[in-house]
Length: 302
Image 1 (cartoon, helix red, strand yellow):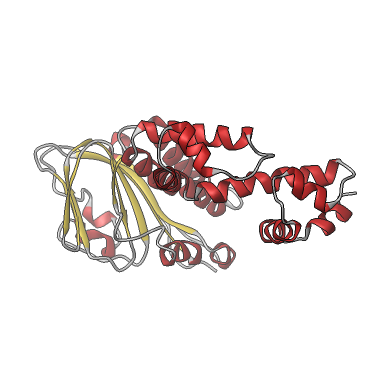
Image 2 (image 1 turned 90 degrees about the horizontal axis):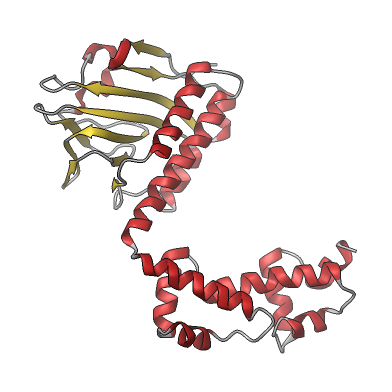
């Protein structure tokens, strides 16, 4: 069963657009691609060009519209404006923006410059889950990522899957959409953080790894780096989305897994080697991280 009709329009250097079908099998995957395209909009051209070749609900983009899906747009040349709710943004080469379902929005290139845009539309229960967990949010819909060939590579990969429509092309296209979303969100995070944040995090990771068999001493690590423990925690969490303590526990438990697999030692000795004086605390942490008690881990991996 198909839920929508596919249309394809193409004309030389103008670009192309697809509006895509998807099956019940695709919908069960939780992600479907609904539309893709790239368009070169010349200067002094009404927007969107070739208006009647778009489905009716997509047409009033320059005046304001609401869609029932997600879209990502990436502008690689020209300039224009994008607005959603009370916010308005200036679009420059390298700008990317996210449209959410039921969000009133409008965008268009400047009449004097035109622009070149790439877009992909998508929907499904998995993307809705990302929105519920605030990974996709109205608080963060505009991104100045700059011009990058690897972003165009991801778009072109989606275009190739859509053009070929080989078996499971919807699944493959949506996997690439996830990569595009990840790059969009991580690119913004990288730009918002000074370079020295990465240096601090890498040095902290190195010191944790070098002291993996010792007691957890974040104060000593922070002092060796030359910052306060609270500042280390703030930077580390902002950069990695986990606290330095959580990361330290993670690498210790991973090392404990290897010890229990490779050496004939007791759980108590493994805990002692990893710097835990309390065997039962170690066992609780181990089970929390792996889903299995260290004694059972040892049995299963013999």
